[in-house]
Amino acid sequence: MKRNTLLLLTVLTCCNLVVNAQFGMLKSLTGGGKAGKKSGNFKSVWESEFDNKASRLALSNADGSIIIGTDDNSATVLNTEGKQVWSGDYKKLTTNKTNNSEFQYVIRGDKSGYLFLFDARSMGTDRVAVLDLTSGKELWNSEAYQDLLDKKEQEADIETVKYINELDAFLIAQRGGISMVEAQTGKQLWTTKTFKGSVGKYIYDKKTNQIVMLNYKPTFWSGLFSAFKNQIVKINALNGQIIWDTEFRGTIDKKLITREPLLDLTVKGDKLFLWLDGLQAFDLNTGKKLWEVAYENDTEQAKKSILGIGGRGSKGVYGALAEPLFTNDAVYLAMFANSSKSKYIEKHDLNTGKLIWTSEKITGAYCLPHMYLTGDKIMVQVGGKVEVQEISTRRGANGMITTYKIFNDYVNQKNGLLALNESSGQTAWRSDKFDKRITDMVIHENKTVFAGDGDEFFAYDIASGQQKFAVKHNDAKVGKATDVIDFGDDVVVISEKGLASYKKADGTRNYATAKLSEIDYYYLVGDNYFLRSQNGSKNTIYGINMTNGEVKGSVTSKGKGGSPRYGDGIDITDDGEYIFAFNGKKVEKIKVNN
Image (cartoon, rainbow, N blue to C red; front, side):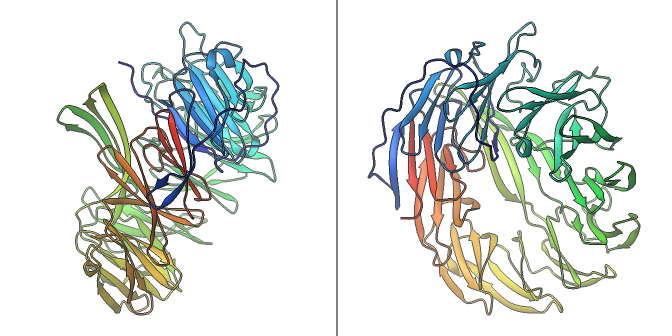
């Protein structure tokens, strides 16, 4: 049975596209959507159908003016009114007869975008074709780029192609080097053999038209690929000239589903900082390594296989340790103390890396996900939610079904708030009045910090650590608290079965919503807030008015496709005003605000 393929969606802004290639017959603007149906309290704008079955990819572009559904061999695109713009088989749409597309990569923009097709074949004849989403026209195709995919493992991500939004171009990595290719024409702008491997992270400087980029070794390239080395390069984006080339230390891991490399690049003044197995500092002008602090970043606390009745899978846990906190002259690091669960905070001079102070050990802490500088205090969150990415496969009526889930979870540990004196690292105060969980922090005017545990909601004076109030959140009857949102004069507490709002001044409850079902995530999209519930094969999105707790409506989808961010069958426009629900050939457009 054919393996399910993970579809990675890159949300980027594209320039207007120029069509300059031949194309097959496209269907004219036909059909339309039916209006008037209600979806919860949301209003359904229309319901329409793809000409093909959207079994591989289904999503909208940023503003919902393009809606695409694809299978292995064809694509259909609808417009903002649900009318068909074009539909066709890849074999007819492409001049190199790209047919069975094992991987389809969408770059979506405000008004247009690209559909990048990969047809993995034998004997060095892999085919690539790029279509304009607006028209379905082939922009270009090539057989010059081979071994871009792992042909044995089609659940792998596209490790060898990176879209550079600022330049409207693709960086394509091959064993011999990397090439910059114009996205609209396929013209190779330059190639270099100095940089080898896939692009793990890049920073583009518009003023100088230069790119700093870091590589990693694609998992499917042979261990005999001896020319590979860990590299950071600074390169002239116009002609590919290498300005400097330096090596970095460490091994890059990636998230299980989204395949994001677990690292970060940050520019501060004339310095470049790499967060990977510690913190490494480089001179941005020369690439010279200035200093480093080696420690285990703990960005991936656990990655393991999971087994169930009639199924199998794997799970990764991420975000358990706070990223470096930079100021103008210092950087604060959350670090492992030893092989035990103890951790601590260090302050280092930004220019030299010299250790300024070390806090006392923070005992019993599995995770320290956040820390903030507020006034003369470093506020550290001890405990809290981590991100879980889980892939599970089970047997269904028609064969094996693979499910991808991204959600938050909590670790059983000692939870609390810790305030450190910024100048010395000494503990100013610590509160452990939190049960088996703690929410993130909301800091108000550098004076008050708010956080909740499962059953209570607290406020503390940052300077003294004095508790200003404690509210019994379980009285709101919306389940245990999971997160907090800073909302003007109020703090909104997201909970397992709804949410409640409290005044920052005294903790008075403004409202509590009706009970919802198993809330596991929230989103702020544009000016709109959404809650998500994943229960079995169902994925439900609720629209919430944070001012009064009103549930605007809900959408439940059992379909596939959509954005991995929102779960199976759901996509949301970037302004949060419209939801798209996908189910096979059907797609529904739903208005959030009536």
